[in-house]
Image 1 (cartoon, rainbow, N blue to C red):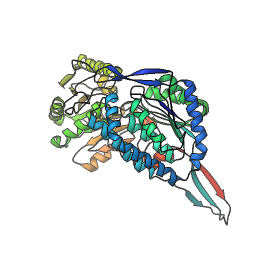
Image 2: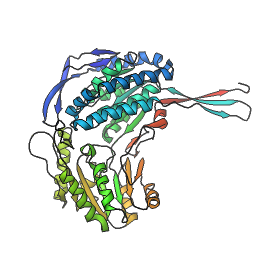
Image 3: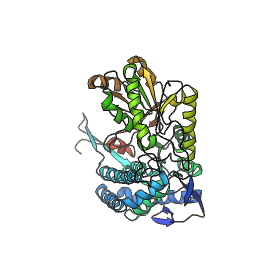
Image 4: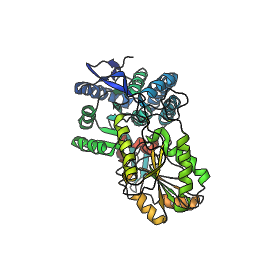
Length: 469
């Protein structure tokens, strides 16, 4: 199975390559081309060269080409899903579902149109506020949803009239390479380019003087580095960074009704979701009952390789994340945490960690204070609502949070006091392509999705017209 970069609409080979690991076995299953800094420069030059023509293309025509790409993606969804499952580790059905989700997101985003605002002036003149594309956008994507998040980054950039240079995670580059290869059949040469590599290429994108904006999804430390590197030419930034989302369960909540939902929103994609529930604060009166029900669901879940049709949850995606989650579980146990389900890595090959529920932990324990980004859920007691709000808000992160109650009005009031970009009531992690999503505090800068997200890829231009115009 051969892979190549896409630069200027053409497949470009590389002199070097690197191994791509199957997380279900821990062994290499493919080689990926390794781009050089010179090839990054070529990709940026191709994007810069394509920008003027793409920006001048009427938005309806741009949307037609994006829809043609979505049609082609749909035709290859099964094959692309199989490749994604192999490199990411998620079950095949979930991987194919990611492809179809990306197609839906593409089609919806292709329908967005930037507004032209008009303000009448007292002297009879008129002001028009236009939105214009920025230029070349650099996209750096993570390994948890490599195809979906690429679409989140790239499609609004293209709709807005920008061109793109993308770098996927070196842990999951292959499905992205295939996707851009498909896109190149339907878009003008140079509009969407892809290069592969690790820190050298990522830093090169952030520093590059001919890239006007960087959009990044990943860890907060890497986001800080991108912000620093991009300062040289005051790059526009959209950063969706780490989260340590709290769910607060009020004493009037219906345990039977909410336990399966909290389980789902904590353990989806084996916990490898930025806005997953990462810590659950449960009132004393409900703590034991809810913890036992969530633990029972975790213990019954089937964890295994994505190729097994019976698998519900795959491995952690890479050795580094596996070791980190294992360390946090060990630390929780050392601090007096009691595991009601899981708690130790599974024997055998691959990066398998069971769905795990730990109690008798609290703020100050690493498993509560740090984003585990894996299948270990701490369930924490509280007795006072004002105290638990303060504890939930004490994190430097502020991506999402939720409140669970049968009193929707009361829950909504408390949810609005959470210091996070998105607050849910009796739900968590739900997103949609027409609703803005972004983080507060150190969980990011800017928003994605909807018209608010489209604005992130455009520059406002105010045009003042005289009376009578």
